[in-house]
Image: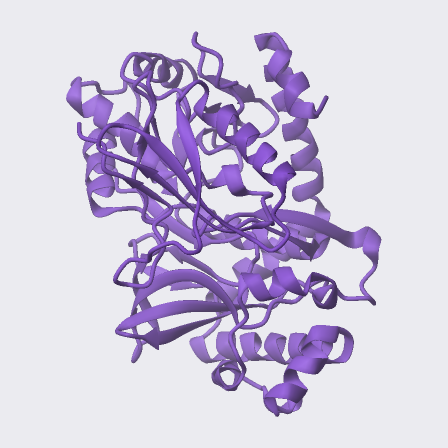
Length: 445
């Protein structure tokens, strides 16, 4: 019996205690002495000139390139096959002479990407799914993980959010078991100052309980998937609901914030949400400043924007992960980009529709289903006009019956009793921009 099965069987009070215990563990490991030292350096660099910042970025790039060529088996072959001298890669522009790295390449050569000289006891195993729904399990270092949280907190502190602010979190974790059909539809993490709301129970009938919880705890900060936050906002507008207190900050991540979602959220709460673009792999980080302008965190990662058919693919190079460096890693997202001023205008990635469940709940991002499915090459979820849900899957070479069993388990955990089917395909159709839309719904309202 795994931890989640045990957790799901606990009474409500013990589930809250379990969330707070896990929150305490995260606080102690993530926000340690090293974190505060790293955050201090990141915030000091806010005062640097642009030239000084870019010089620092390129210095970090030279270090990771030299290390990768010297120690990582894949990159030793890579540079030789490309005919590129690693010492000639001195700045961001020099990276264009190297080929692009894809998630599939890394998955198929995983052992050759992990550093044999990096201490194993300082490595962490991370999981991500990303836009295409392909599972990805990789290694990173404790320091790189802490540094990632430091750059994220620099962005948050830049717009006024502090560590003492309570947060209403709308994410993808199933903190409330999907089989539960009675409130409350949230759990409280006291240690992390977080009220974690379920994204899997947001039906019209349940929404008053979400409002009641906000009024009870009065968190000043809302964070999470825009697909979930906008459901809450739309319900408030439709029912003329105004909170008795002010929400000071709304931040979104993991999905692209669509224009209509932004407008609905601002209309309901009276403030415009801030967007953040990042990923577990740590190869890029782009956040909005206090004026809602996108800012590339040049001191954290090397971010390239590669033109292709009128669009700009985002390509990233980690400057922090020496356990398993990722160089020129194709993230799978597209940006609107001002080349002359190196300025991001918008990020056109992770656009998704909703899936509607029989109980009336709308589910936005469902990539957590494929988080550990490393034998799935691609995945796509479609709901037709009658409401039928189909999980379209492109099998990887090692896909077996056990993978299908796990897939069914993950789907049922999130969709409950909803009827669905799994369809295996050779490939999945892309949009005109070359993007795979992970969730597409044609369900008629």
